[in-house]
Image (cartoon, rainbow, N blue to C red):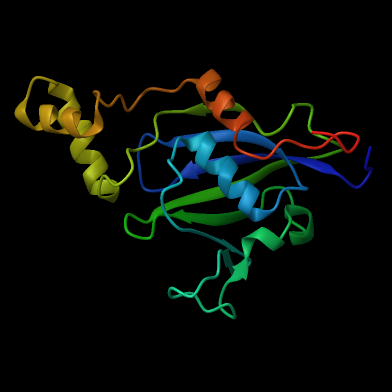
Length: 195
């Protein structure tokens, strides 16, 4: 066991929506920020269809490319491990997903524990409420869907149901479903040099 390895309990909260949509997950600090992005996508229920960015201590992390990002303005999330960021308990940082809808999340370090995570990979231990549908038009679009679903027989609700493929339940939270997604969020660790 690597004695320098730590596990972290993170609280991921989607900002701007009440009642809150949030998840509490346990991860190891050996993850890169790209890995953490994949964990957030799986834990929250996003579809990983859009760009993202972290802002930690005034530094932006994401995937630099030739389509508008200047490599000098954004650090490569694939090259930065959580352990290298020297994060402390109670510290918070931002995660933004989908620069069109601008889903802004606050990540809080709830606890840092020495040693490996007691779970086999990232694991959700609690949370609340359903993630908004992708491409719904940010918070106003989300609120329109929630309002429409109060009467699923209305014309507006039927339009949303046709678009989404099913009625949207804002209160839905299935921790087993989330943990199944988390099992597939990261590449499997190699043990003894074998897959």
